Length: 325
Length: 293
Image (cartoon, rainbow over all chains, first blue to last red; front, side, top):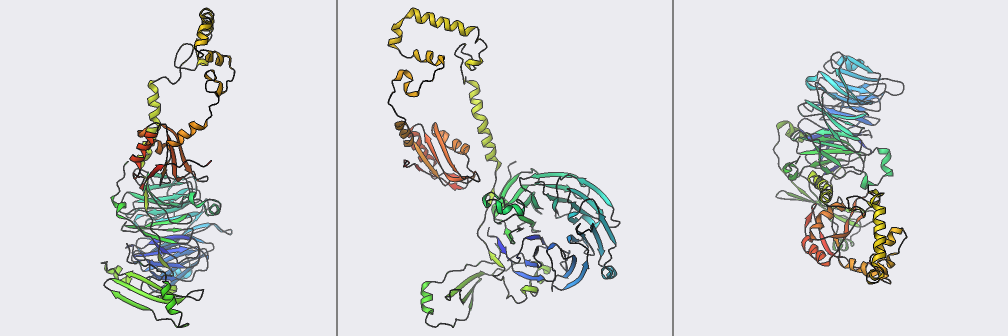
């Protein structure tokens, strides 16, 4: 396969996300620009300009109308997807680490960092009520005093948010009351990324403790563990195969002191049921910070510390490959 | 593959010579569409002041998509891409080099495990060591009869030595050696076996070894010594395997030397394995050239 290289960022990529149909790919990085690309040929549709700090997170709603981004400039912004115009700006007291639309696209959530003397908060806004945006007053705001949220996604039916914490905990926060519905601690270190399966029944967590784990999203039952020898920065579940892709590598600060040949900057493919690795794809010059499967399962993208996003269309061999357990 | 494919071809020297005459004016870019292939020819002056001709070839593909996706495909570009022409902009989108998914089949891992177990299983049946005292399956020093049988045997041997006399000693120097080793005194290799091999150097042996050495190249990075052993064992007994490895990573550098005990085995190995597909690569096997030192 010949990956399409997207060079829209000047610093390391922090998150990439496909929209529901998979025709658009959103990428954010530690520079201030939010890019959107056509996934089919890598053509850049546009940029959402306005942030003044590193952008940590991006999400797009179900019908690709609005885009939500959170940044270290202490704002969470809502954009019109088609024109790139800023629709709303929500000021916070610390950096916005995670954000997301619920399935309806009506309710948004975002979490802020524990920083500069401020606590970590998980905020819920209802976009149908313009007053909330105007007053910058969330209808529910959950303080997390113990350990800050490092990654979060909406659970099924928009009832709760599944959040991964710096200490390895996973919590379900109700979208109605903000109370903790379930709590598990299967990871020993920070959870870098959480992604859902296509039907939202499962979530995969990627952790600094060198593993990625698969959970039932409602019961938070631990289903599978995928072990590597490097911190895992991101993991995604294939929508059509029993496969999981993981991206990682050693920490950015150690990159300059290790030879690239032992850097292990590959994207690694694991069989979801057997928990065993069956394939690797090389390409990035640094650790992979985020991976995402196209919703049709025929391609995947990865964004790295090297600032590039690579779109990979799988070769036929990938689909013919049979795992021998 | 996605719909873009382009290659930047270098300007030929002929074009450059031709254009040297009219300095300053550049031919206007041309765009031709032939079937589903679009060719864009551009001219520009590079940093060194030379004129370059850039030819890009695009493949135009028509795809069916849902209405929502098709509508989005016609959206106007915005932000930093506002003034980009239709189609991918080379400043932001490029097609990178071919990469392949390397499949990790754990069949290989299983094989190496089997192989590790194999020699032990084979050896189970036969004695590895035999005791000099009781001929048991253990080292002499560990013999349970060391204190009882040992001295008795010594006495017996001494008695025999006395009774049989010097005749045996002169005709056969062999028994002298075990007696020597028993005393624990070091005997240089050249003096062993009654010193018959005195003056014989190691060199000829070594050369014989070189003669039965083959060089294997185009090995994959993941090759280990055990893989080579497994691959070449069927051809005959191997005296030495040298696999060149990277100092830092411990990964194979892609070549190895394998010495067989017999030259015929080496010849058969060359015939058998050269051109053999191993780990997605085609092996190249030939006689090793004698080393210079």
